[in-house]
Image (cartoon, rainbow, N blue to C red; front, side, top):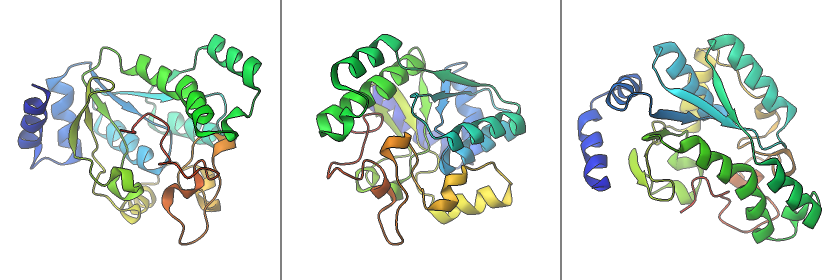
Length: 233
């Protein structure tokens, strides 16, 4: 059934702009369309599109408790510019407390398993709460971002979270994103000008050198697939 729904959405929206697709989804799934932002460049494009089109889509973010100050700065600027509420989800305090008591504050550096445990507590569990009861999840994923994301589709069913996922910027290049942000004066994270492309938690993100893969700055000490569990398969 999910495959049929996804194909129907692809067919119905194939000639729509992103804004028209947002409007269609908001009407088709009233009060059950959500967008998750981490205030990266792609997410800022989508936030601007949602806000400027005045579409009834809920925007939320995950505050892991270990974000850069620059991320909070762009969060604040985004609220001021677009006057659009952004719901915040936090990890369970007891789970974070237990993790730090058992393994200390930097256990994620010690193994992929430990890092994924931290990501699960700080990101996956709050995301599960945010998505619960909703029908469509809008993301800022782009195929160009990593090898893992090359086989994504514009619409797909996420069986892990049991929700339809819409990736409106899937075919956009980084230049497309940067051009839109510049042209529309969209608030951006100051770290982007310091070599940070993909920005997550402060202890797990570094700037990348010219020619490095876009995701090279995330969990740089690992040779894993560089996913935290939000979008990994």
